[in-house]
Amino acid sequence: MKQKGSHAVMSERKNVYLFYKQTEELEEKVQKIRKLGRKYDFSLVDDPKDANIIASFGGDGTFLQALQKTQFREDALYIGINDGDFGFYTDFTTEDTDRLELAMQSDMVEVLRYPILEVTIDGSKSFHCINELSLRSNIIKTFVIDVFVDDLYFETFRGDGLLVSTPTGSTAYNKSLGGAIVDPKLPSMQLTEMASVNNNQFRTLGSPLVLGKERELKLRIVQDGNDHPIIGVDNEAMGVRNSREISVKVSDRVIKTLRMKDNLFYHKLKRSFL
Ligand code: NAP
Ligand code: MN
Image 1 (cartoon, helix red, strand yellow):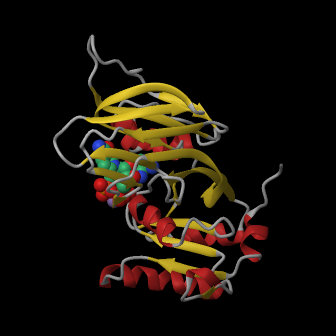
Image 2: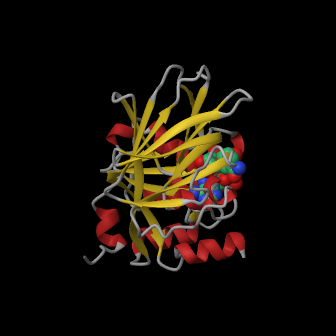
């Protein structure tokens, strides 16, 4: 399918919600961008529910917060504007308003669709993440988790914890755990281990596992008295005492974000790691 240029993308979307930490320093930079927005007939809204563009000002961490706080809107276009260097989710910076202006009027932009994960706890509470889900103990004790793939019992994990990342999250926590970098064009999820116990008694796969879009992962916390799990959802922690089963799937929903055509995922990889 041919992607729409920015002209179409931006002219259909005029209601903008700005997500940022209101510090004096940032406020000044945001003012410049507000001015630019007025020039191109955008209007600012106070409630993200009324927005069809949600712009975050800050690093990748701020972009993650913007998504969590606005509930991963499928009908909105998210734009990450960095307050310094470019990041993985931020294709623009407050320093370079020319680039942003170019994006508003030219065909130099493209809408990316990023896969996200859908996580359900004990069959009821559910939420999304765009980087990863992490599951670990908050006390110094081996954490035991039974892992199921599509209802097939796969392995029993013992160690610090498990992490399930999206393709775009693969360059973050997942990478520190020795996971592979996954191209965001592959809707998938990756399971990585945090310090697994492996000996003649206990065995886990021991390598990262990439699962396709149709799979379901179930992480069943073995109730052995360690009822202190922490669930990390992107950059937020949730205390979930007494949870037993966490199901993870690649969501049917995708997140739309704007990028410059000259800034491919591989540019970002090269810039950050090589
Ligand atoms: P943070 O602890 O302040 O920053 C973690 C670093 O990861 C920041 O430099 C952040 O970039 C960067 N980052 C975030 N998402 C990324 C991505 N998809 N690819 C590459 N780098 C990424 O926390 P934060 O800024 O709120 O970010 C939360 C993320 O930190 C979590 O989702 C997790 O992936 C990661 N994390 C990593 C480890 C680890 O590697 N051992 C441990 C805990 C959390 P910015 O500076 O632009 O924000
Ligand atoms: Mn950060």
